[in-house]
Length: 157
Image 1 (cartoon, one colour):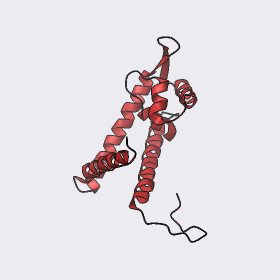
Image 2 (cartoon, helix red, strand yellow; image 1 turned 90 degrees about the vertical axis):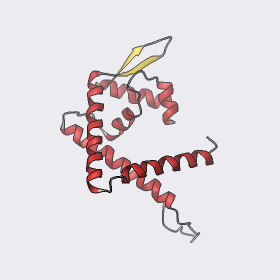
Image 3 (cartoon, helix red, strand yellow; image 1 turned 180 degrees about the horizontal axis):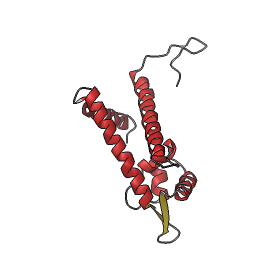
Image 4 (cartoon, one colour; image 1 turned 180 degrees about the vertical axis):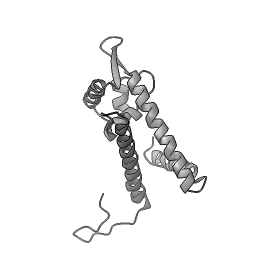
């Protein structure tokens, strides 16, 4: 979303919320890029930012495409395509279930990948604690939760 004036010189309200959205997106992108680069160095050749982002939304147990699509706000076709790619990469497996449904589960390699990613995130936690005031990350998380609740209220969720 542009932060500059329009060509018609329409007024553009200053917004910390816009800065928050853009900043959060940049932090998200940076973290997933760091994870992908570091995990690729560890031998996970299919650990892309988009694959890691998708995998991070899954439960450690059984997942279903319809639930994933609903939670991510994407089509079931998109989920099926991504799951197929991650199955080929060896991170996920699909197992027959009731009717035509298939369970989506992590393979052993997928579990190890997620475990290694979580360790890298814990390492980032330590680095942040060393650079920032002790309660900065905790208070930021509290503030983000409060912002999420307020936005949900505005959306009547």
